[in-house]
Image (cartoon, rainbow, N blue to C red; front, side):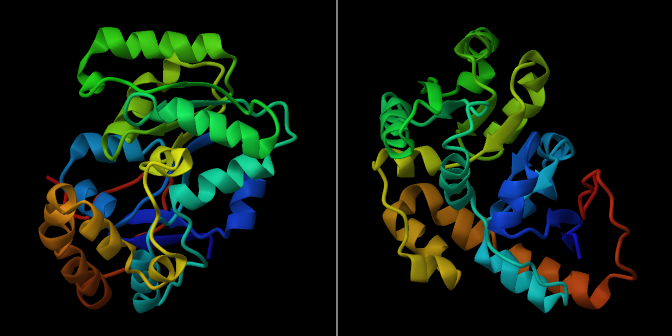
Amino acid sequence: MRRINILNIWIDNLSKAESLEQIKHGVVFTPNVDHLIKLQRDKEFLQAYSIADYKLCDSQILVYASRFLGTPIKEKLSGSDFFPAFYAYHRNNENIRIFLLGADRGVASKAQYRINRKTGRNIIVASHSPSFGFEKNEEECLEIVEMINNSGATVLAIGVGAPKQEKWIYKYRHLLPNIKIFLAIGATINFEAGNVKRAPKWLSDTGLEWLYRLLAEPRRLWKRYLIEGLPFFWLVWKQKFFASETPKEEHKTVALNKE
C-alpha cells in the first residue's frame, strides 16, 4: 500500500531507503500526532498540507495507530532522522545545496558548520536564524527569501516548528524558483547543532520520545502532550469502528472534521 490514511491525512508508506531514492523534488512534511490534531481544526495548516508531495511518518504512535487500523506503516521517519540521512546520501551530489533556516540566533550557523564537517563539503551553503515572530513580518520574510535566492541553494530545510514552517513554505515557495526540495524539519536544527539532545533510540523506537521531550521542556510541551493530543486516540478508534467507509486515496489532503 503506497499511502496510509489516518484521520483522513494520507501518509506515504515509504522506508528511509525508498524515500531517499524517490525524493528528487517537491515539498516534504513529516506528520505526527500533534500535526494530525491541528489539521482537524486549522484551515490554513490544512491548506499548507495540501501542497505536500511527500508526507513521512514522524511518530511511532502513528505507526501503532496504522497497525490498529489494519494498514501498517513500514517505518517511522521523523525529520530529525530523515534530514541527516538526506545530507549523508547526497554528500557527493553537487546539485544538492542546502539553506538552513530556523532555531535561535547562532544555532543554525553552528549546525551548518557541524554538518559541513561531517559531509566533507559545504553542502549547507548558508544558514539563518530568524527573529521570534518573523512569520508575521512581511518585510523580514521577503529579506529571508532574498537570502535564499542569493545563496545558490537548491534545497530549503526549515525548522521553526509546526504549523509555522509548513505555512511559511506554502506562502513563499513560489518566490523561490531555485529551490527544488522543501523540507520541514522541526527541532532538527537544534539536534544538529548539538544544543539539544535527542531521546535515546530505544525510547524513540517504543513511542516514548514524547515523554523524554516533555520531561526536558515541561512548560512548553505539557499542553501539547497531556491535553491537546488526547483526542487522537478517540478519533483513531472512531475511524476504525464507526467510519462508514475508507475514503479513496487522494493527492489533496482532507481533514476529518471540516468546519
